[in-house]
Length: 87
Image 1 (cartoon, helix red, strand yellow):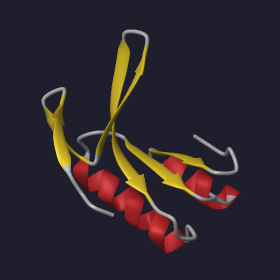
Image 2 (cartoon, rainbow, N blue to C red):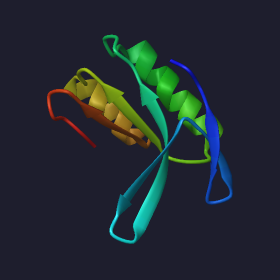
Image 3 (cartoon, rainbow, N blue to C red):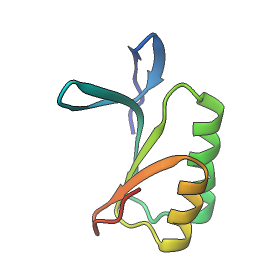
Image 4 (cartoon, rainbow, N blue to C red):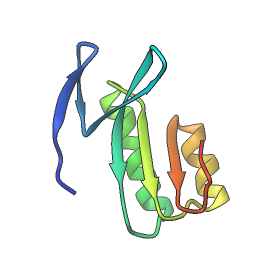
C-alpha cells in the first residue's frame, strides 16, 4: 500500500482519512489490508498506532475474527470488515 501523509488539526497523519458527520469531523490514520488478519499483523497495527499517537487508527480488512477484534479494541484500533464487524 502506498503511504502518504497530511496535516489534520495541526497533526501530521499517515494515510489520513477524515470522517464528517454534520459539523463534526474526526481524523484517522487509515490502514487497509487484503490479507488474512493474523495476531502478528494485528499486533503490528496496534504497535504502529501506539507509536504514532497522532490520530486514532482505522483498519479495513476482509475479516476480523472475534478474538483479534477484542485485541484491536483493547488497544484502541478501530476496524471494519467485509462481514460487517466493526468497532
